[in-house]
Length: 334
Length: 134
Image (cartoon, rainbow over the protein chains, first blue to last red):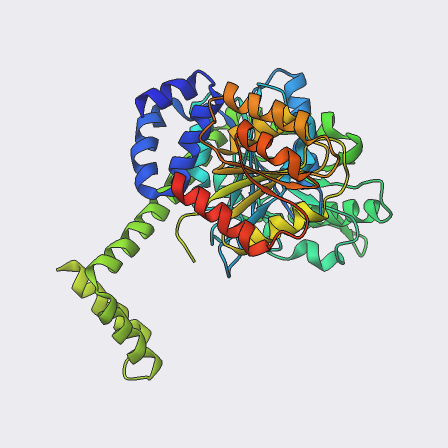
């Protein structure tokens, strides 16, 4: 394994690919590999790309990767697509939009299936990112499952989160709902050549302004609005969320978008935001691993029969879920 | 549902634009519980083998209806050897004359499925190959 890590550090694609498979397939695999390479991680800039299905995430990732290569960054791409809740199978098709990227040794693309996770990433995504970070990629682009409103795990996994919108996806109220728009460090209106793009941009900008303190003229008097900024990761550091327009399939607006992404990175570095995010990420990872260990402990400490019995007694009302959990907890403690 | 999630690359090398067959096979493998990576039309042998390498797949399926299967498969198999991936089974579908099957098998293609091939037999074949390797 040390050998594999050494080869991955030297950029050998096969070794990187094998390590990813190992950390993806079992927690025990990840528990061996991540500790061995953790000291090499923390270097890469992790950029998350999320948005509705068909908003153009893969095409945008494709263009961003090309733009990053023009600036001599080594780029890794992690693209997550959903697993079937019925068969566990998956069709991973993000590479179809990334065909321009083949044949470049400075780019590594890996498709992942979500494997039952509901937050837009797979459980192993954090560990997969670490392998790529240790393999010395400068920038890691993480594309989530096509997200609706609440798949916000990416904000905990990335330094810079892009939320992609396309024109014509709903009225103004959509843009002030809680959820995915709140996690954006940068908002992108893709397909900006389509009718309605200007309106989408305006509605997003209005949404952002609602969250800021500003002077308004109300019945002839100048008044200050209260700040109701959402508690996102960067507000404390005064990051103003920009709204960028792109047409990914034509490559329009990409250089500007990349400039903004790199400005955000510098901003994080300059304001301690980087460390804040690393702490947030570390906390979430510890909690997720603890949760998984607790579940494992529950499954080994309480026999299948006992579990079935508990489930049945909750279902037929001889006990309730809270009492059942209290009982299980007592059993695990001893 | 099995715990083991085989990763299968299905690819269309060369210049034909007929992707109905490859999509049907991709869908069937997906429904059989596998993770299928589809890379789209008009792939070069280099693109396919690079994708297989990065994705660390358990098998590679090729769909060729252009008649150019001999040179394409020859090149793909050479690249597979070059990248030390000989342990990854390769199967092929499309319009493949019977006369070519022996030569393709000799090149290392482990299964050839022509028109009318039974979908279950393709799925079973892939399961058997990836289990043998796991």
